[in-house]
Image 1: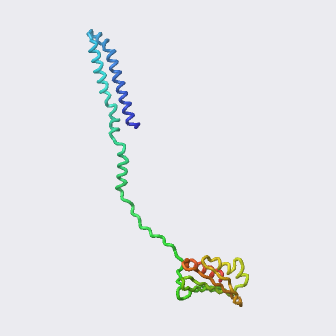
Image 2: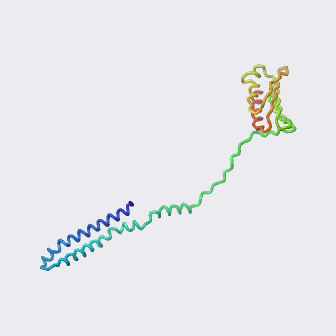
Image 3: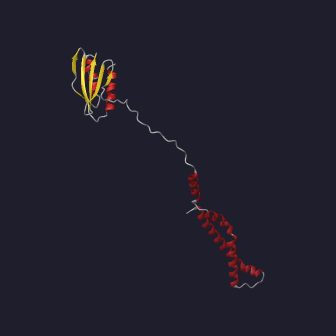
Length: 206
């Protein structure tokens, strides 16, 4: 039960008790007063006077419920409604348009009629395009010892770790020169594959 409603009920109950008490006092005190003034008080007049005084006591305590009446006249939803209206009237903050963060692509390589060459001091990779849109990778390695070429972290292992290139077995051209042939299938992400190939060539051929 809401506080205002509960206060009003309690106040009405107190007013009712006050009216009953006033009526009881009037009923009990009516006979001694009549005897004092040597009056003949009929029973009907005694009850009528008691009712009038009780009713007067009821109206005399009316001011006790004025504050609860005012409280109940205020709708409970007024405050939230005003708050919502103020929020609705408040202009929305202007937001600056955010530019889409475009991914930074690798250097675009267009392998067309002219071969694409990736070169360092010891490794040269030449990329050409086939008629079926696949790419052929030809790698020439010079000035590298057999251990540096064949080792676990050598040139050959590093080249073969580039995903997207299918390699054939390397050939020894003599004079410390070795060749590797590979193929990048059509439809593969050529730009990504060539970027990784360039990284290996520059790192291992320095």
